[in-house]
Length: 441
Picture 1: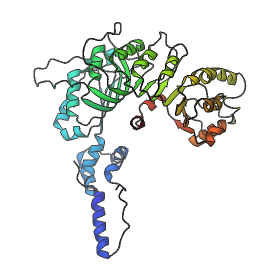
Picture 2: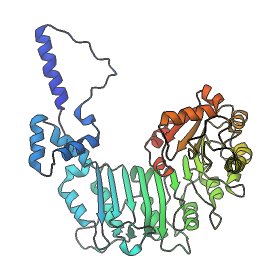
Picture 3: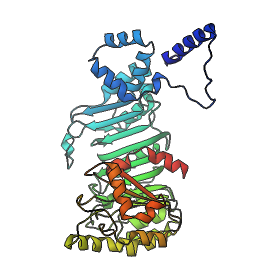
Picture 4: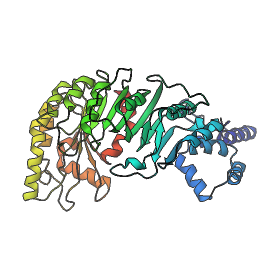
């Protein structure tokens, strides 16, 4: 590990010089944190090395002449994330060999991404590299500080027959803790998928499996239960029905604190989302669900702990008068009149994902298709603290969008209830602030 930072060494030398001269400096408060070089963001180290065209140890060694801790600290930053691409005929053994030879660097790794070199949509199984369970188990064993694991378009295989060295013992259920795991478009049998996932306690899981035995998603006996606080099910999974049937067999009662299934269209076959949430979602505090009156909407009054509800309206904030405005208002009416009354009356936050709409429209109550929302929220949710609008993009800056929202909903603006941000739901599922939020809840 790195010794004391150069910043602190310089501070001590400066303090000694000041004391010798008889000068005094104001003392730091007890809760002040001294900023050091290791507090710099990882991107800065990458930018410096790129600017220096650093491709060898000599350049790093030269940097240490300026800052004696540069080598150790830069390595900690640069090796905090490993992104490993493999072709279908390659394996991950060389990664294991390198990490075993460089144990200090393995200890720096916080994020490990294993991915097919040629990512295809839809996934082409012939292009996927294989990752055996014993290989993954070995990687977990030699990367002691892993916090984020991403598996993309891999074929998860059973253990290989290796006489030497002795394989690393398989992890026990919940042996490893992860802040974030992405299991996306990985081809595997159902039981093997959940055997792998059961190794972890996961704060947030992005779940998009491809089952090779999806025709009969029946679980064999075994302790392969999921331990997940926050779950996002991709609405473009290969077989959503099998995915939800599998989840129903592996989740624990009242397991979830956050659930996100932002289905952006009506599925061909009905999904057991409501049944799933009745079993696993009674402790939910945050829900992102595109509901339908026929099924999912029925679960909303049965979630007693719900504090935050997220909804994709497909209705813009601004629209010009005419047929388009009338059509948008008709689309929005069921959400306002049917769905909102089903939400718990003590809801604290409502988040709407909306397009911005026509930038030529003058913002105001008459220029938004979200007509009646302000009155409905005030009547239904007396304790509502925030109404958030999340835009996928904006024609101008965020300040202009915030001002437009305030003009459309003046009463909520005056009460300080409006929030604005720009991001897609895919990025929101991967935002780190969700973990702090869940811990606060």
